[in-house]
Length: 96
Image (cartoon, rainbow, N blue to C red; front, top):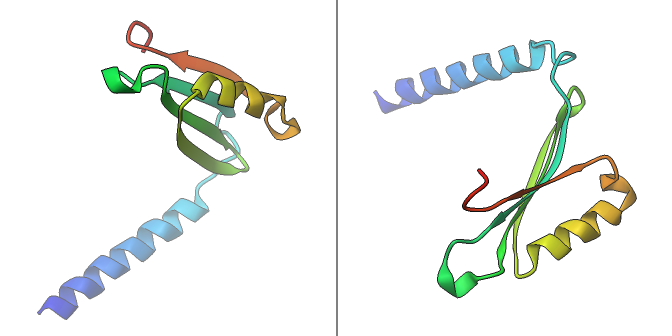
């Protein structure tokens, strides 16, 4: 009985994957952002999460890292040629 359930799940996943790859992604809006979200924990003051998001017709990519100096890390990434077109977004408690 369990094997039949797994076959149904696998078939459903394959169908969804096939549908996804056949979608027209040419109208996907281009998003290129480096998002810095400062930690709220008192022991992590000044630390935060940096998320590099690249989405568009060519595909989706997201990289997340925890940094002790997140704003400095983001500024250094923006200096690299690969990230020159990216927008810097800084989130804190007051700005969500």
